[in-house]
Length: 337
Ligand code: NAD
Ligand code: UD1
Image (cartoon, rainbow, N blue to C red):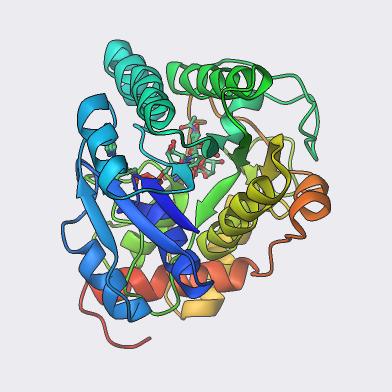
């Protein structure tokens, strides 16, 4: 299939482009490069041995996206393009409503104008808010705890409504747990701007010496060792799930909402230990107060993804640490990996 990847030059989009190309699909990247490096398509071309078409556009520009889809017809869209920082969404709500919700509406208008009726959407486990218990199933109650989370829920509802009313033939809302890791080639990976909010990028920057120590936010949670527990998922597993999801909705014309996680929880201290063992790098840490808005523990029940797509995460926490480190070390010019 020819598949449009909005935000395809970003972290998860670029890995998905690589996997789609490997599986014989033809990814077409649409990105405004607001949060992506310009040379990502060139790196993908080296990695896959294939030129990958790139449309430089903003998803909110319906006219430009419609025109691009007329010259580059596609059978499905995987919609990654969004703003994704929780704190920023609370500081600048209108920007988040505009980029995420208005942007998705504009994109859907362009898709309708050219008759593209299949979409895979990047949602997030953030829609579960503070879950009552884990593992979390897809029918667990959703809760909005910040504006970023609200935009994800609104976009999910929008997509489900369009599928229910026959405006979309197939749709998959994919709720990611905590994506980490990088392509094992270290040619693509995550490049956070400024001080990383998320744990793994912070740990890798401590390992390169860019940051002095890791602040562990809270060691008094009701978990095995008192630190927060999450379901980390390797970005290559996540990328493979997208390929299977788009193939599934194209084959069956269905609308589905599916968790993507490993089903296993890892605490902050467990992740740090796995990182130290796998990479041989020491991560100095300091216990700090809990981060406001954080949940003690959550992890997925990923059984639905296996039943529908035949997918399950294959990579473990050691793979995640090794590949995150390879990527960060190569960026920092460190050659001992
Ligand atoms: P990312 O920022 O690396 O990728 C997003 C891409 O979209 C970037 O390349 C950016 O330049 C592009 N973009 C942003 N606004 C755009 C616009 N208006 N028009 C065109 N392009 C635009 O983020 P990511 O980590 O790859 O996340 C991809 C998706 O997955 C997002 O929707 C995010 O909310 C969701 N998600 C991410 C995580 C995570 O931890 N990374 C977790 C759950 C869900
Ligand atoms: C965060 C976002 C969530 C988003 C997800 C993307 C918040 C409140 N939630 O989730 O909406 O979907 O990222 O992956 O921002 N930690 C430290 N020190 C650090 C960084 C993190 O101890 O420097 C701890 C956190 O307290 C948490 C765990 O590491 O227990 C994971 O944190 P993080 O990677 O930020 O992910 P989430 O909080 O799950």
